[in-house]
Image (cartoon, rainbow, N blue to C red):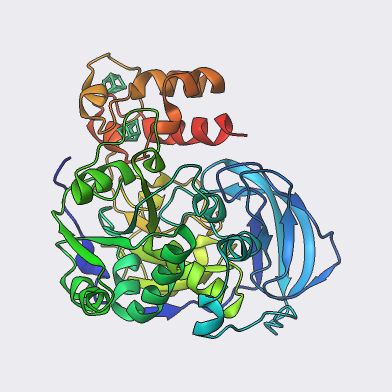
Length: 426
Ligand code: SF4
Ligand code: SF4
Protein backbone atom coordinates (compact mmCIF):
# COMPACT_ATOMS: atom_id res chain seq x y z
CA UNK A 1 0.00 0.00 0.00
CA UNK A 2 1.17 3.53 -0.69
CA UNK A 3 1.06 6.78 1.28
CA UNK A 4 -0.69 9.63 -0.52
CA UNK A 5 -1.33 13.30 0.26
CA UNK A 6 -4.84 13.24 1.75
CA UNK A 7 -6.33 16.67 0.99
CA UNK A 8 -9.30 15.96 3.25
CA UNK A 9 -9.03 19.40 4.87
CA UNK A 10 -11.28 21.06 2.28
CA UNK A 11 -14.43 19.28 3.42
CA UNK A 12 -13.77 17.09 6.46
CA UNK A 13 -15.51 19.59 8.77
CA UNK A 14 -18.28 20.49 6.31
CA UNK A 15 -21.63 19.23 7.56
CA UNK A 16 -23.88 17.55 5.02
CA UNK A 17 -26.16 19.97 3.13
CA UNK A 18 -28.90 19.20 0.61
CA UNK A 19 -28.45 20.42 -2.94
CA UNK A 20 -31.81 21.74 -4.24
CA UNK A 21 -33.26 19.33 -6.80
CA UNK A 22 -32.46 20.41 -10.38
CA UNK A 23 -35.01 21.32 -13.05
CA UNK A 24 -34.15 18.15 -15.01
CA UNK A 25 -32.59 14.85 -14.00
CA UNK A 26 -30.85 12.39 -16.33
CA UNK A 27 -31.09 8.88 -14.91
CA UNK A 28 -28.90 6.38 -16.81
CA UNK A 29 -30.23 2.87 -17.34
CA UNK A 30 -26.89 1.50 -16.09
CA UNK A 31 -25.86 2.53 -12.59
CA UNK A 32 -24.77 -0.83 -11.23
CA UNK A 33 -22.57 -3.80 -11.98
CA UNK A 34 -24.69 -6.17 -14.05
CA UNK A 35 -27.33 -5.98 -16.75
CA UNK A 36 -28.49 -2.59 -18.01
CA UNK A 37 -32.08 -1.86 -17.07
CA UNK A 38 -34.89 -1.33 -19.56
CA UNK A 39 -37.17 1.70 -19.27
CA UNK A 40 -40.58 1.12 -17.70
CA UNK A 41 -41.86 4.61 -18.52
CA UNK A 42 -42.15 6.58 -21.76
CA UNK A 43 -42.00 10.20 -22.83
CA UNK A 44 -44.98 12.12 -21.53
CA UNK A 45 -45.59 9.88 -18.48
CA UNK A 46 -46.01 11.56 -15.11
CA UNK A 47 -43.81 10.05 -12.39
CA UNK A 48 -43.56 10.43 -8.63
CA UNK A 49 -40.47 10.76 -6.46
CA UNK A 50 -39.19 7.27 -5.68
CA UNK A 51 -41.22 5.56 -8.42
CA UNK A 52 -39.49 2.66 -10.16
CA UNK A 53 -38.83 3.72 -13.76
CA UNK A 54 -36.46 1.02 -15.08
CA UNK A 55 -35.65 -2.61 -14.38
CA UNK A 56 -34.83 -5.98 -15.89
CA UNK A 57 -35.01 -9.62 -14.88
CA UNK A 58 -31.50 -10.89 -14.10
CA UNK A 59 -29.43 -12.23 -11.22
CA UNK A 60 -27.18 -9.18 -10.96
CA UNK A 61 -29.21 -6.01 -11.38
CA UNK A 62 -30.88 -3.17 -9.51
CA UNK A 63 -33.87 -1.02 -10.52
CA UNK A 64 -33.70 2.73 -11.17
CA UNK A 65 -36.11 5.14 -9.44
CA UNK A 66 -37.27 8.66 -10.20
CA UNK A 67 -35.31 11.18 -8.14
CA UNK A 68 -37.86 13.96 -8.65
CA UNK A 69 -41.56 14.08 -9.45
CA UNK A 70 -42.55 15.39 -12.85
CA UNK A 71 -42.92 14.44 -16.49
CA UNK A 72 -40.69 12.10 -18.50
CA UNK A 73 -39.23 14.37 -21.20
CA UNK A 74 -37.69 11.48 -23.12
CA UNK A 75 -35.21 8.63 -23.13
CA UNK A 76 -32.02 9.64 -24.83
CA UNK A 77 -28.30 9.07 -25.11
CA UNK A 78 -26.58 11.14 -22.45
CA UNK A 79 -23.15 11.57 -20.89
CA UNK A 80 -22.32 8.82 -18.37
CA UNK A 81 -19.50 9.07 -15.79
CA UNK A 82 -18.21 5.52 -16.44
CA UNK A 83 -19.54 4.39 -19.81
CA UNK A 84 -19.00 7.72 -21.57
CA UNK A 85 -22.54 7.61 -22.97
CA UNK A 86 -25.61 5.62 -22.06
CA UNK A 87 -29.37 5.82 -22.50
CA UNK A 88 -30.90 7.91 -19.75
CA UNK A 89 -34.46 8.67 -18.67
CA UNK A 90 -34.88 12.44 -18.56
CA UNK A 91 -37.43 13.82 -16.10
CA UNK A 92 -38.64 17.41 -16.06
CA UNK A 93 -38.95 18.30 -12.37
CA UNK A 94 -42.37 19.74 -11.44
CA UNK A 95 -40.94 20.93 -8.13
CA UNK A 96 -43.63 19.15 -6.10
CA UNK A 97 -41.59 16.23 -4.74
CA UNK A 98 -44.77 14.17 -4.87
CA UNK A 99 -43.70 10.94 -3.23
CA UNK A 100 -44.79 7.62 -4.72
CA UNK A 101 -47.66 6.04 -2.78
CA UNK A 102 -47.22 3.11 -0.43
CA UNK A 103 -43.81 3.85 1.13
CA UNK A 104 -44.18 2.11 4.46
CA UNK A 105 -42.43 3.25 7.66
CA UNK A 106 -41.26 0.46 9.93
CA UNK A 107 -40.50 0.55 13.63
CA UNK A 108 -37.34 -0.94 15.09
CA UNK A 109 -39.33 -4.00 16.17
CA UNK A 110 -40.79 -4.45 12.69
CA UNK A 111 -37.35 -4.24 11.08
CA UNK A 112 -35.99 -6.71 13.62
CA UNK A 113 -38.74 -9.17 12.76
CA UNK A 114 -38.01 -9.14 9.00
CA UNK A 115 -36.69 -12.41 7.59
CA UNK A 116 -33.42 -12.40 5.57
CA UNK A 117 -35.52 -12.98 2.42
CA UNK A 118 -37.63 -9.91 3.23
CA UNK A 119 -34.53 -7.76 3.88
CA UNK A 120 -33.04 -8.85 0.54
CA UNK A 121 -36.34 -8.16 -1.26
CA UNK A 122 -36.45 -4.65 0.25
CA UNK A 123 -32.82 -4.00 -0.76
CA UNK A 124 -33.59 -5.09 -4.33
CA UNK A 125 -36.83 -3.13 -4.50
CA UNK A 126 -34.96 -0.02 -3.31
CA UNK A 127 -32.28 -0.45 -5.98
CA UNK A 128 -29.41 -0.47 -3.50
CA UNK A 129 -25.93 -1.15 -4.80
CA UNK A 130 -22.44 -0.94 -3.28
CA UNK A 131 -21.98 2.81 -2.92
CA UNK A 132 -18.25 2.75 -2.26
CA UNK A 133 -17.90 2.66 -6.04
CA UNK A 134 -18.22 -1.04 -6.83
CA UNK A 135 -21.98 -0.79 -7.52
CA UNK A 136 -22.52 -4.50 -6.90
CA UNK A 137 -26.22 -4.98 -6.09
CA UNK A 138 -26.63 -5.19 -2.30
CA UNK A 139 -29.32 -7.89 -2.32
CA UNK A 140 -26.87 -10.31 -3.97
CA UNK A 141 -24.18 -9.50 -1.41
CA UNK A 142 -26.69 -10.07 1.39
CA UNK A 143 -27.11 -13.64 0.16
CA UNK A 144 -23.59 -15.13 0.11
CA UNK A 145 -23.41 -18.60 -1.44
CA UNK A 146 -21.15 -19.87 1.36
CA UNK A 147 -21.42 -19.68 5.15
CA UNK A 148 -19.86 -16.54 6.56
CA UNK A 149 -18.86 -15.68 10.11
CA UNK A 150 -17.88 -12.00 9.93
CA UNK A 151 -19.32 -8.72 8.65
CA UNK A 152 -16.91 -5.86 8.05
CA UNK A 153 -18.28 -2.34 7.63
CA UNK A 154 -15.97 -0.30 5.45
CA UNK A 155 -15.51 3.20 6.81
CA UNK A 156 -11.90 3.49 5.65
CA UNK A 157 -12.55 6.13 2.97
CA UNK A 158 -8.91 5.92 1.88
CA UNK A 159 -9.43 7.88 -1.34
CA UNK A 160 -7.80 11.35 -1.05
CA UNK A 161 -10.13 14.40 -0.92
CA UNK A 162 -13.36 12.44 -0.21
CA UNK A 163 -15.03 12.90 3.17
CA UNK A 164 -18.73 12.04 2.75
CA UNK A 165 -18.40 8.62 4.43
CA UNK A 166 -16.62 10.28 7.30
CA UNK A 167 -19.39 12.89 7.67
CA UNK A 168 -21.99 10.11 7.50
CA UNK A 169 -20.33 8.38 10.48
CA UNK A 170 -20.10 11.66 12.41
CA UNK A 171 -23.66 12.83 11.72
CA UNK A 172 -25.64 9.59 11.30
CA UNK A 173 -23.87 7.13 13.59
CA UNK A 174 -27.09 6.02 15.30
CA UNK A 175 -28.82 5.32 11.98
CA UNK A 176 -25.72 3.45 10.83
CA UNK A 177 -25.89 1.33 13.95
CA UNK A 178 -29.47 0.33 13.07
CA UNK A 179 -28.37 -0.44 9.51
CA UNK A 180 -25.44 -2.56 10.68
CA UNK A 181 -27.75 -4.44 13.06
CA UNK A 182 -30.13 -5.27 10.18
CA UNK A 183 -27.31 -6.36 7.84
CA UNK A 184 -25.71 -8.54 10.53
CA UNK A 185 -29.09 -10.15 11.31
CA UNK A 186 -29.77 -10.79 7.61
CA UNK A 187 -26.37 -12.48 7.25
CA UNK A 188 -26.76 -14.31 10.58
CA UNK A 189 -23.41 -13.10 11.99
CA UNK A 190 -22.51 -11.81 15.43
CA UNK A 191 -18.91 -10.95 14.62
CA UNK A 192 -18.96 -7.36 13.34
CA UNK A 193 -16.03 -5.03 12.69
CA UNK A 194 -16.04 -1.43 11.54
CA UNK A 195 -12.77 -0.35 9.88
CA UNK A 196 -11.91 3.37 9.88
CA UNK A 197 -8.63 5.04 8.93
CA UNK A 198 -6.82 6.84 11.71
CA UNK A 199 -7.15 10.21 9.92
CA UNK A 200 -10.86 10.44 10.92
CA UNK A 201 -10.82 11.06 14.69
CA UNK A 202 -14.37 12.48 14.80
CA UNK A 203 -15.81 9.47 12.97
CA UNK A 204 -13.82 7.10 15.19
CA UNK A 205 -15.16 8.80 18.31
CA UNK A 206 -18.76 8.78 17.08
CA UNK A 207 -18.72 5.14 15.94
CA UNK A 208 -16.81 3.87 18.99
CA UNK A 209 -19.55 5.12 21.29
CA UNK A 210 -22.20 3.33 19.18
CA UNK A 211 -20.34 0.06 18.81
CA UNK A 212 -19.33 -0.36 22.44
CA UNK A 213 -22.73 -1.55 23.69
CA UNK A 214 -23.21 -4.13 20.93
CA UNK A 215 -20.06 -6.13 21.44
CA UNK A 216 -18.94 -5.12 17.94
CA UNK A 217 -15.38 -4.11 17.18
CA UNK A 218 -13.79 -0.95 15.89
CA UNK A 219 -10.52 -1.29 13.97
CA UNK A 220 -8.51 1.90 13.56
CA UNK A 221 -6.43 1.43 10.41
CA UNK A 222 -3.34 3.22 9.16
CA UNK A 223 -4.02 5.88 6.50
CA UNK A 224 -2.51 4.14 3.52
CA UNK A 225 -3.91 3.55 0.05
CA UNK A 226 -5.90 1.38 -0.85
CA UNK A 227 -6.80 0.54 2.76
CA UNK A 228 -10.50 0.50 1.84
CA UNK A 229 -10.18 -2.19 -0.85
CA UNK A 230 -12.17 -5.21 0.33
CA UNK A 231 -9.26 -7.62 0.20
CA UNK A 232 -6.89 -5.17 1.93
CA UNK A 233 -9.50 -4.47 4.58
CA UNK A 234 -10.08 -8.15 5.29
CA UNK A 235 -6.33 -8.70 5.58
CA UNK A 236 -5.78 -5.74 7.87
CA UNK A 237 -8.85 -6.26 10.04
CA UNK A 238 -8.92 -10.06 10.31
CA UNK A 239 -5.51 -11.20 9.01
CA UNK A 240 -7.32 -13.34 6.42
CA UNK A 241 -6.02 -13.49 2.86
CA UNK A 242 -8.57 -13.63 0.00
CA UNK A 243 -6.88 -15.71 -2.73
CA UNK A 244 -6.72 -14.41 -6.29
CA UNK A 245 -9.91 -15.21 -8.17
CA UNK A 246 -11.83 -15.63 -4.92
CA UNK A 247 -14.24 -13.35 -3.15
CA UNK A 248 -14.59 -12.29 0.49
CA UNK A 249 -17.25 -14.94 1.18
CA UNK A 250 -14.63 -17.60 0.28
CA UNK A 251 -12.91 -16.64 3.55
CA UNK A 252 -16.17 -16.28 5.47
CA UNK A 253 -16.53 -12.50 5.20
CA UNK A 254 -18.94 -9.97 3.73
CA UNK A 255 -17.91 -6.30 3.45
CA UNK A 256 -20.38 -3.42 3.12
CA UNK A 257 -19.53 0.24 2.76
CA UNK A 258 -21.00 2.68 5.33
CA UNK A 259 -22.94 4.56 2.63
CA UNK A 260 -24.53 1.29 1.46
CA UNK A 261 -25.50 0.44 5.04
CA UNK A 262 -27.06 3.87 5.41
CA UNK A 263 -29.07 3.36 2.21
CA UNK A 264 -30.22 -0.02 3.56
CA UNK A 265 -31.25 1.65 6.82
CA UNK A 266 -33.38 4.15 4.87
CA UNK A 267 -34.92 1.40 2.76
CA UNK A 268 -35.75 -0.78 5.77
CA UNK A 269 -37.07 1.95 8.06
CA UNK A 270 -38.71 4.24 5.48
CA UNK A 271 -39.03 2.09 2.31
CA UNK A 272 -36.93 4.79 0.67
CA UNK A 273 -35.54 3.82 -2.73
CA UNK A 274 -32.00 4.87 -3.60
CA UNK A 275 -32.70 8.14 -5.40
CA UNK A 276 -30.13 10.37 -3.72
CA UNK A 277 -26.65 10.05 -2.25
CA UNK A 278 -23.89 12.00 -0.55
CA UNK A 279 -21.26 13.58 -2.77
CA UNK A 280 -18.09 15.41 -1.71
CA UNK A 281 -17.58 18.42 -3.99
CA UNK A 282 -14.01 19.45 -3.46
CA UNK A 283 -10.65 20.79 -4.55
CA UNK A 284 -8.62 23.97 -4.10
CA UNK A 285 -10.53 25.76 -6.87
CA UNK A 286 -13.78 25.96 -4.91
CA UNK A 287 -14.58 28.92 -2.69
CA UNK A 288 -17.07 26.72 -0.81
CA UNK A 289 -16.31 22.99 -1.09
CA UNK A 290 -19.05 20.91 0.52
CA UNK A 291 -20.53 17.54 1.32
CA UNK A 292 -23.88 17.49 -0.45
CA UNK A 293 -26.94 15.24 -0.48
CA UNK A 294 -27.72 15.08 -4.20
CA UNK A 295 -30.60 13.64 -6.24
CA UNK A 296 -29.33 11.00 -8.64
CA UNK A 297 -29.37 12.22 -12.22
CA UNK A 298 -28.31 15.78 -11.28
CA UNK A 299 -25.73 17.09 -13.79
CA UNK A 300 -22.47 17.81 -11.96
CA UNK A 301 -22.44 21.40 -13.25
CA UNK A 302 -25.21 22.07 -10.72
CA UNK A 303 -22.99 20.79 -7.87
CA UNK A 304 -20.05 22.83 -9.14
CA UNK A 305 -22.14 26.02 -9.37
CA UNK A 306 -23.53 25.47 -5.86
CA UNK A 307 -20.04 25.23 -4.34
CA UNK A 308 -18.58 28.09 -6.40
CA UNK A 309 -17.44 30.54 -7.39
CA UNK A 310 -14.34 28.90 -8.80
CA UNK A 311 -10.93 30.55 -8.36
CA UNK A 312 -9.99 29.57 -11.92
CA UNK A 313 -11.17 27.29 -14.74
CA UNK A 314 -10.46 23.65 -13.87
CA UNK A 315 -7.96 21.71 -15.93
CA UNK A 316 -9.59 18.44 -14.95
CA UNK A 317 -13.01 17.39 -13.67
CA UNK A 318 -12.97 14.05 -11.90
CA UNK A 319 -15.96 12.04 -10.81
CA UNK A 320 -14.82 10.37 -7.61
CA UNK A 321 -11.41 10.88 -6.05
CA UNK A 322 -8.05 11.32 -7.76
CA UNK A 323 -7.18 7.61 -7.57
CA UNK A 324 -10.36 5.72 -8.39
CA UNK A 325 -12.23 8.54 -10.04
CA UNK A 326 -12.75 9.08 -13.73
CA UNK A 327 -11.86 12.26 -15.63
CA UNK A 328 -14.96 13.69 -17.32
CA UNK A 329 -15.19 15.34 -20.70
CA UNK A 330 -18.42 17.14 -19.87
CA UNK A 331 -20.01 18.74 -16.80
CA UNK A 332 -23.38 17.50 -18.12
CA UNK A 333 -22.54 14.10 -16.70
CA UNK A 334 -25.04 13.15 -13.97
CA UNK A 335 -24.50 11.91 -10.42
CA UNK A 336 -25.21 8.17 -10.35
CA UNK A 337 -25.32 5.59 -7.55
CA UNK A 338 -21.52 5.21 -7.49
CA UNK A 339 -20.64 8.93 -7.52
CA UNK A 340 -18.98 9.71 -4.20
CA UNK A 341 -17.20 12.87 -5.26
CA UNK A 342 -16.69 15.65 -7.76
CA UNK A 343 -13.11 16.90 -7.74
CA UNK A 344 -11.78 19.83 -9.72
CA UNK A 345 -8.04 20.12 -10.30
CA UNK A 346 -6.11 23.16 -11.47
CA UNK A 347 -3.50 22.92 -14.21
CA UNK A 348 -0.75 22.68 -11.61
CA UNK A 349 -2.51 19.94 -9.67
CA UNK A 350 -3.58 17.78 -12.59
CA UNK A 351 -1.02 15.45 -14.02
CA UNK A 352 -1.07 16.68 -17.57
CA UNK A 353 0.66 13.67 -19.07
CA UNK A 354 -0.74 12.79 -22.43
CA UNK A 355 -1.20 9.07 -22.96
CA UNK A 356 1.83 7.38 -24.53
CA UNK A 357 2.26 3.76 -25.60
CA UNK A 358 3.18 1.32 -22.84
CA UNK A 359 6.96 1.13 -22.39
CA UNK A 360 6.72 -2.23 -20.57
CA UNK A 361 8.42 -0.89 -17.47
CA UNK A 362 6.37 -3.24 -15.26
CA UNK A 363 5.63 -0.58 -12.63
CA UNK A 364 1.87 -1.20 -12.76
CA UNK A 365 2.41 -4.95 -12.33
CA UNK A 366 4.80 -4.45 -9.39
CA UNK A 367 2.50 -2.06 -7.52
CA UNK A 368 -0.92 -3.64 -8.18
CA UNK A 369 -2.11 -4.60 -4.66
CA UNK A 370 -3.97 -7.66 -5.96
CA UNK A 371 -1.21 -8.98 -8.22
CA UNK A 372 -2.77 -8.31 -11.64
CA UNK A 373 -1.17 -7.33 -14.94
CA UNK A 374 -2.95 -4.02 -15.51
CA UNK A 375 -1.20 -3.36 -18.81
CA UNK A 376 -2.56 -6.60 -20.32
CA UNK A 377 -6.11 -6.00 -19.12
CA UNK A 378 -5.91 -2.45 -20.46
CA UNK A 379 -4.90 -3.72 -23.90
CA UNK A 380 -7.76 -6.24 -23.94
CA UNK A 381 -10.16 -3.52 -22.84
CA UNK A 382 -9.11 -1.15 -25.59
CA UNK A 383 -9.53 -3.95 -28.14
CA UNK A 384 -12.96 -4.77 -26.61
CA UNK A 385 -11.82 -8.34 -25.89
CA UNK A 386 -13.99 -8.59 -22.79
CA UNK A 387 -13.65 -12.34 -22.27
CA UNK A 388 -9.88 -12.15 -22.48
CA UNK A 389 -9.86 -9.23 -20.04
CA UNK A 390 -11.83 -11.44 -17.68
CA UNK A 391 -9.29 -14.24 -18.09
CA UNK A 392 -6.54 -11.79 -17.13
CA UNK A 393 -8.41 -11.22 -13.85
CA UNK A 394 -10.23 -7.96 -14.65
CA UNK A 395 -12.96 -8.88 -12.17
CA UNK A 396 -10.35 -9.06 -9.37
CA UNK A 397 -9.38 -5.44 -9.98
CA UNK A 398 -10.41 -3.30 -7.03
CA UNK A 399 -10.23 -0.14 -9.18
CA UNK A 400 -7.75 1.46 -6.79
CA UNK A 401 -5.99 3.47 -9.51
CA UNK A 402 -2.48 2.66 -8.25
CA UNK A 403 -1.52 1.39 -11.72
CA UNK A 404 -2.52 4.67 -13.40
CA UNK A 405 -0.77 6.62 -10.63
CA UNK A 406 2.58 4.88 -11.13
CA UNK A 407 2.47 4.58 -14.94
CA UNK A 408 5.20 6.77 -16.48
CA UNK A 409 3.40 6.65 -19.84
CA UNK A 410 0.33 8.32 -18.34
CA UNK A 411 -1.97 5.54 -19.42
CA UNK A 412 -5.53 5.65 -18.12
CA UNK A 413 -5.31 2.06 -17.03
CA UNK A 414 -7.96 2.07 -14.35
CA UNK A 415 -10.48 3.73 -16.62
CA UNK A 416 -10.12 1.09 -19.29
CA UNK A 417 -10.11 -1.74 -16.72
CA UNK A 418 -13.32 -0.41 -15.15
CA UNK A 419 -15.03 -0.50 -18.53
CA UNK A 420 -13.73 -4.04 -19.16
CA UNK A 421 -15.20 -5.13 -15.82
CA UNK A 422 -18.60 -3.67 -16.62
CA UNK A 423 -18.65 -5.23 -20.08
CA UNK A 424 -17.33 -8.62 -18.92
CA UNK A 425 -20.29 -9.24 -16.61
CA UNK A 426 -23.02 -8.15 -19.02
S1 SF4 B 1 -5.28 -3.28 -11.91
FE1 SF4 B 1 -4.79 -1.17 -11.27
S2 SF4 B 1 -6.71 -0.43 -10.47
FE2 SF4 B 1 -6.89 -2.67 -10.58
S3 SF4 B 1 -6.24 -3.40 -8.54
FE3 SF4 B 1 -4.42 -3.41 -9.83
S4 SF4 B 1 -3.47 -1.41 -9.47
FE4 SF4 B 1 -5.54 -1.26 -8.70
S1 SF4 C 1 3.24 1.17 -15.81
FE1 SF4 C 1 2.49 1.96 -17.77
S2 SF4 C 1 4.26 1.86 -19.12
FE2 SF4 C 1 4.74 0.59 -17.34
S3 SF4 C 1 4.09 -1.51 -17.95
FE3 SF4 C 1 2.39 -0.57 -16.93
S4 SF4 C 1 1.16 0.34 -18.59
FE4 SF4 C 1 3.17 -0.05 -19.42
